[in-house]
Image (cartoon, rainbow, N blue to C red; front, side):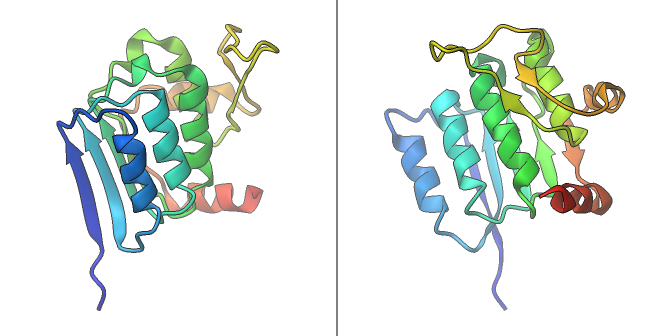
Length: 168
């Protein structure tokens, strides 16, 4: 049978569009089921590349560990969370070793995503990010989001995945 595999990317300092090119190539893979990016310089553009790849690659596991997510723009983080919510095959998300605690907007957005709440980034008319209460809009229960806020690594349950799929 066909063997599935993981793509570990660790300790890399990509320059220019190197990471985007790698993610573009990944979009044509049917074998990669785990993408692990650790200790790399992941900025807003790289995060967008990962988010876009989630539409094409049927990942079961996504690990973004020690990549300084607190440095990316909130709108790019929200875009990743939107794609995570719509990725039907993704069962595991690991964001450990990222200092999210100092950036309440990221923690709030992550908690809402894990609770199954719709995530949409605010944009002002001049194209800049909004500095509203959370920087995102969401519908649903904040209590469930509060409970999920402290989770560094998450495995989606089949029930939660089915619930998300039924919304689409």
